[in-house]
Image 1: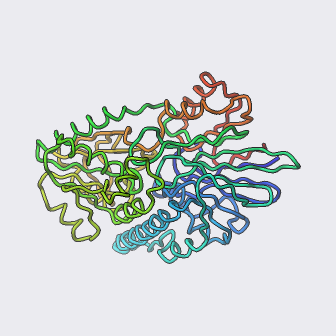
Image 2: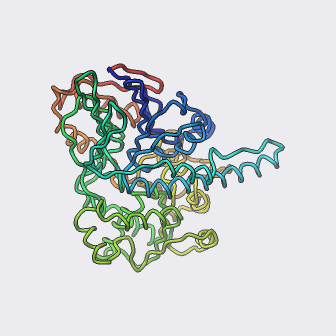
Image 3: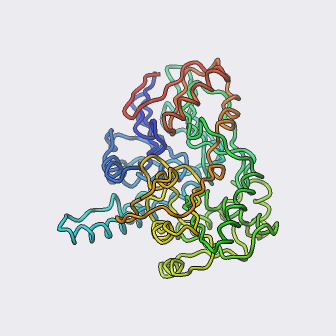
Length: 466
């Protein structure tokens, strides 16, 4: 027997963190930041429901902050074991964690100045750049399809999840008193037939499955329809001399969006106008993409190997400096600005939103999932007034949502992947990384369409003996 406890991404999509205990060893699956209500998120991210000093190994599915963002905190609190990831995940985690630390330092500095004016106490960042740098020393990397021993009772194999660069489905072979059980943790499952990355790889049959369920009840547009809608949104906004502000995750979403824009320009479907990627993290992450052609699908890999740049074109400018970023807000010409973060919780996109959201000529284009209580979710739900950097703004800009640009599999794609499992072998399926309503819809589909039997939707703090 072994034990599973769920500490994050339980009936929500953020803070991925699950603990496997077997033969006295404790293996952590992901260690992500929780994103949501500022006060609640700050409190949840400060503490762990377990002692980090007792964790033996951390296995990281991919580098997104909601899966990797609390690693420096784990180490600050005494974790000394290895962090096992793919080569590309390690490289992306390096830039992601440094950027996260930088943002937290700057946010703490900004809030402390505001507090000082009100006679309130200063605040400390969750972790610092020094903490992030220190955490990178514990990474150990391996490639897809290579079985490695992580404890005396557990072997690990990574399979390509097709979600972002380096993302992995985690398969653990558990050796228990002479018998063997196979556990799969999907991390975030990508989409088939998408540009840039390879399709998700089937891992083979397993006994226990921990699977994401973000879009368990929703469908994405087909690729052609997605490009058509993107073209329409841009043309309509440019025709009224407006700006398109695109909050986007710097890793994955930004590169796919740039690739789609490249295609539209190549097909001469867009007027010539400037496009800016305003995020130091996106700039650095795109460089990491160029270093890992082995993770790409055939067409993009060939372009990179032939020294063509699929992430750059004539109208595109990558911005790193603060002054260049500020200059965009005083430029009233039509333009498209891609800036992190995707859920609008931090980073330069907040300043672009503050500058643009009250102008009806502009468009806010949301390209992926926003968790409950985030600014991104409030914009998606078109709340009439939102708070940005402590000030209230009326939402007068056009709001468009294109979840079909998401790197998460939708309901059809999730069911397509899960249909490959032998339902009679599966002992238990755990649904994580999804809002409860989406998980309930996905649970029904797994039972009714695929014949899965024992399905659990754990809450944070739930423990299961398997």
